[in-house]
Length: 325
Image (cartoon, rainbow, N blue to C red; front, side, top):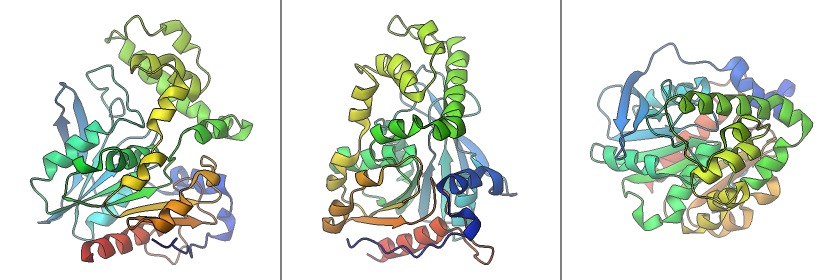
């Protein structure tokens, strides 16, 4: 597809990637209408936390996947789902393993290469809907891209499109970005505290096995170290770099067979613009790529005169276009 020309214009106070990124927590909160809680049991005896908006009857479901150290009731993502439900769709937000209000029953965490839970949700709910769309932010976009591209023949035919907001399609540049002092202070410290807190809570009732050195994990100061000392050995990888290579979705984008929209920004503090699939998107019949000048990481602050956030408008356009197609 031709590269989508972005006409997003940030409010003048938000022409900075960090302000755009941080604006989500400052200005966008959960909608007043509470979602309907639910749960989904996995084949290995675990449980996923779900939240629904189901306004009347609908043949269309939109599944929302969150990013790193977020959850299904994340304010901006739940607000996005609430907006989409106002268009007559059913929406489903789900918490990945170890991200729900209650920690999951098994020792597994969520990883960029592991799309099995998303696949299970799609296959289960495909029995009740004619169309399913996948909306994913940040690391959720990595997981969704791997689901669509790693084994495209196994993607459920009810999936009609995917909308990826600020997805890190490869993770090496994310970790390089986290070494910058400002990124470390603004973001990485939060990620590390949150991940280590989950580790401690899970360690109280789950045996991580001999491959995990508990004290070494507790001494981690970066996400890279947590991946190297906890996630990699626990999930069968040689190192954090080995895991990141396996989680990289870039090589698999060419295999995607459903319309997929990638929306990102030049001033995203987490993503290396040189790694964006510009040439592939120009050749692919299924990839749409929009690179805005401003927007930060999943920010895209709206002007006061706008009814919808920019990515909501883009998703509605994309959904209507792919439905017609």
